[in-house]
Image 1 (cartoon, helix red, strand yellow):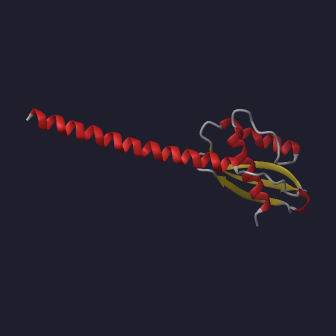
Image 2: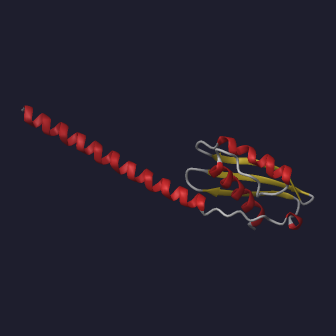
Image 3: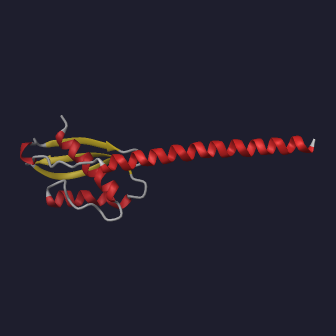
Length: 133
């Protein structure tokens, strides 16, 4: 009876290790895909002089970080950038990058130190808002 109990415990421990290993591998693959997606982000500056007054919605998603923004254009200038949604993991401070974009009237501003990936995702969301039809 004692041997059977030991066998069941060993079997359960092995099962837990296999399941945990599967989740670990899945997380590592997702993390690699996320890093690759961020590395591939290229920001193109839209021509504000060609944009009509209005509100533009754009979003960008690299799995661990997502941003959906509403950009308000008035007289060919960025007047406001509001977050519809922002999932940022540890990049909360990147949210303030929109202030720099409004002040400088461009998307390609310096990223926020310590929140570079989140900054890039936000910039891409703003770009897509202003360039996609």
